[in-house]
Image (cartoon, rainbow, N blue to C red; front, side, top):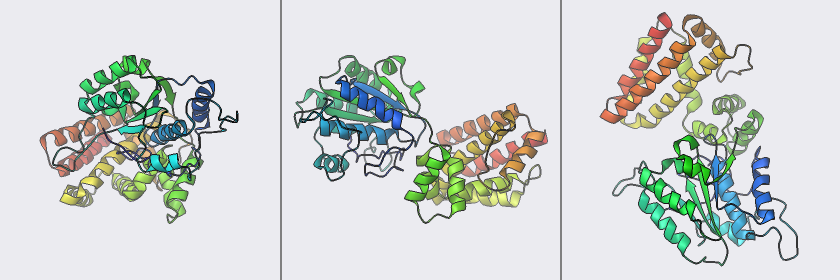
Length: 370
């Protein structure tokens, strides 16, 4: 079991959102549902907060946890006034203790580092859930609610999820479980059925752009616009891509693909050599993510002719039209699945990253030429 500062998680899912209690843009209805449950005094013992990465799921979970630890489970304070929203004053001691991971009635369960390693474990382990059961068996440190945030529930291994199910089936009094999930379909149906579901949708482009500008004020307008398009409604994704040079990677990818059907192999080899270097692992992961996004956007253009699809970088739209004239949608979808399988196999048997990049471009050239 691990404890994290409010509004963040190990994967950076919601790190876009300032830890200060700013309103969740575009998530007013989600807040209203949580607030109504509190006002009625009927808070479910478990909420499953799901949606795409980076749209504010962990932020909302911590926001509600902070609110509940501050106000308790009744809908009104001593003077009969119900809170107007989930915001807690940043100067409030509860806010500070939650932000500093120092509140005795709040824990976070997330992937932890492996023993004698800086690498994260691929799973949340069963012993972490057993520790969570012990936490809920204890008396509340401050006489109120005990809250746990599981971030993300998708990371539970089979034994851990089965142990969690027992807790969901026999919920503790005045105990609340907040499960964050990027892919709820990976959870057992019984896990999902024992939680109140709250699905967060991608944000509007204008809201994503506003968050990017507020968080990264030094970016020029063109890069903000590109990040907004690539984020597809996820501020967290936009912030992460900005830190990883995602716009430059995407621009290079589109430029290289623009030489099809006769690829510029000097430039392809330069790219593959760069991504294959010891310090190229992070850029390689970004490149894999973005080639999938590029193919998805290209297929979407073919499947939805006439739809309003702004370019992330200049020339992207014209390139998509040219590729779609030479390759069917099925072939492009098959291509992405092939690249995904190749990348997974390379990770499994420790193949050079260079081979994945070269094979991806060779397969792309073949798909277009056929």
